[in-house]
Image (cartoon, rainbow, N blue to C red; front, side):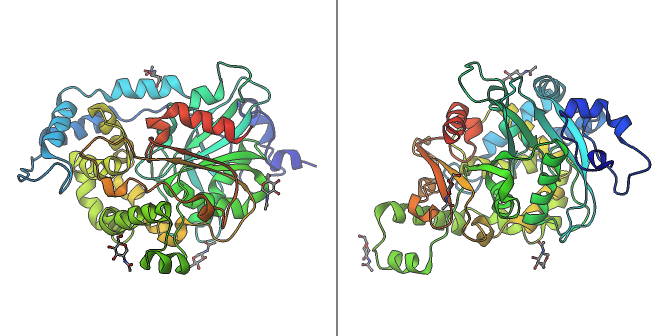
Length: 425
Ligand SMILES: *[C@@H]1O[C@H](CO)[C@@H](O)[C@H](O)[C@H]1NC(C)=O
Ligand SMILES: *[C@@H]1O[C@H](CO)[C@@H](O)[C@H](O)[C@H]1NC(C)=O
Ligand SMILES: *[C@@H]1O[C@H](CO)[C@@H](O)[C@H](O)[C@H]1NC(C)=O
Ligand SMILES: *[C@@H]1O[C@H](CO)[C@@H](O)[C@H](O)[C@H]1NC(C)=O
């Protein structure tokens, strides 16, 4: 008779907070009932200062007379960012903005089961729309991002200026080990365990059916999610739908019989996984051994992260953006997020487990207008041929844009908002 209490509450989250004391009925509890609590980002100023002290003592590397980005981020860029960090960067102003702009929460979710048997704590942004007809949407980021990858689209999605546009209740968690979600304490949090964690979060918020938006390692989680929780997903929107060639595609490629579109795509993914992805091999084999160095050198970590961000992005970064994005992964400890690759990254996991029926929206943001010194061989990385995607996915919306790269919600936020709206219309 207390099922209403022990099952997840369907009340509005804020109301459920107010009633939490009442609903924690001592007679009926077996498993603990978790409730989200409002959260304020508040990093220990002593840690921020300690980090700055390391930045001040950063040992410069002298690079050789090679083209920019030939061997890594140019030393002039890194030295300039380090100088800005040492002299001007103001974490506390950034933190004030993060707190002022978004509604933050913290909760615990039950052990996901499978290969991970402990409860997990989660930080998440939960931006509820004022609109009664708002649609819940869950955003899953990847590395090297956090919930703040969505910072430019959360508010317009939650409360669109134009009433004729759909509105959303936005849920944007930090994956465990990133941002303000503590890292898992043991191995085993694989794709389906991650999916279980976020499905529990959505249950806790009272959302039965929702849109799932994924990117990067979040897309790996999503490909489990749409199989394990198919009936909860209104639509899976992803800006990272990688498809690997079949044996037949590879044979055609070798014999020069692929279409120009297929050839460009295969050239780009071969270039990426052949020559630009050492970071992923390292993170997914010996994350602890490299973490000692990255965790001890904030500038070293920034440079490591910057290489990937620059490789796959098509926007220039300000020093403040580079530092903030690095700090959001450095603050919790680098090991906890880079080892996520060991759980989630393998080429076969970037593709769905099997054909599925969940309506799927594929957003492709290209690199066609990169600034001149970018890696041209990666230009078509995001342009999987649509018919390849349709081998496994029920494609209900497909959009291809010339720019936006791997972080379109930061590079081309208006387009992402438009695509999300159009995908659901
Ligand atoms: C909130 O976000 C907006 C848009 O990204 C930004 O311009 C503003 O500075 C942020 N607010 C604060 C208080 O930082
Ligand atoms: C748990 O790990 C085993 C061995 O790696 C794997 O075969 C199995 O699929 C995993 N279980 C889940 C639920 O992910
Ligand atoms: C494929 O096409 C390229 C460029 O047109 C050519 O150099 C190469 O010899 C061709 N290979 C085969 C196997 O036909
Ligand atoms: C694809 O999704 C649409 C929209 O939900 C649905 O009507 C259709 O039956 C699905 N198609 C397949 C092949 O599952």
